[in-house]
Length: 543
Image (tube, rainbow, N blue to C red; front, side, top):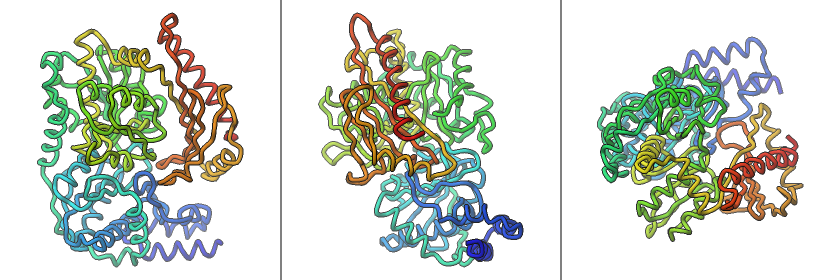
């Protein structure tokens, strides 16, 4: 195998259009580092839950100039084959290492292929790019971002004319077109794209505010709300501040250490609000300023996390709160959640008589839920992604979700209530839906496939002492690499992450709330049952 890897590496280096990337491979060849070369040439990056994503490194299994060149050329070929030659494409980028470079390469390649390319003026949130695709009448969009991944990663999200991320068969067709691209150094390039001004961001801000109708709440109530906020070293601060100002809120209290974009993400172990410790600085700031609510966006601002009363709410709790708020506002249409999200949303939709849709994991599926008779009006996934204004951005949107959370918090504050008070009220009405995760990050991906095989071969017959039935969702339509275990008041779904080397088990138990014991006792029982589920599933997965 060693000579084959060295031959592949030499051929790749000869074709690599980027001097730095080329030197990186040549140095590994010169050093005879076949272990690292095997890792980099194990295969090309594939379209996962959110397009291409991987470590910044030379070679086909990394994000680099050659891979981006081929990706852009493959996208151009696909769009041409679909009859869109010469149409418009919008390109956006975040503030990660090499994001601006990859955006420029994409613009050069698409322009060279004859497309009219508009590039966003600076690093901006992913939902702005999703909005821009439809707003400008483009046939596609590209967002260079790795979202909440570690600093050494970058990624490449592809959107089609509907402003949503690609789904089958388009993703497979684009992959095939990428594979058919010739030498990267020979891909034609142009230089006549347009760098947009601030108009698109202006229009996005106006559209978000108009969709959420802040004037339905008294202006004084909005101004009184105290909000703590962090951009987590990402690109959301400026756009979020503009949205809050346009909606009539006082300026947020921002975590200064995390306000400006920094691709090293120096104050967090992982720039993901879900990770332990990621919102510690935000929580401390909220306590100092007496915030009614604290909000964290991930680095590309398509997700947001909420802290209230010193407690970080789960994605399922925030999803239920936002859906309940919209339903009480009279917003009717389809409400959707991914299959790994909690079940409370279904109960809420049934209580209000509106359609509910369960989708595969990923917002590319959630955003396509609904029908002409009942279009999507709200969607969420437990991993902190929410679409409260799907008419604006056809993707999860942390900026509009942040505004919706603030409006809800301000509305509750008028009566002296908080977000956690409303959660307690929902628990009394519908039962306590306690959700959590068992999440294991691995270095060897084979450990994930081994665990999934073990679970499929020998699923547990009982969880929490209750009988459960196993369903392999690989047999569903569309197929999902997941296993669901379902019993009376207990549910577990196990799947590999689509964006990170993780195996995830999504846990849920439903605890009745009794008048004599109350919500506090139910929460205690729910926490205990989640701990028991973690232990039982760790054993079942051999972890």
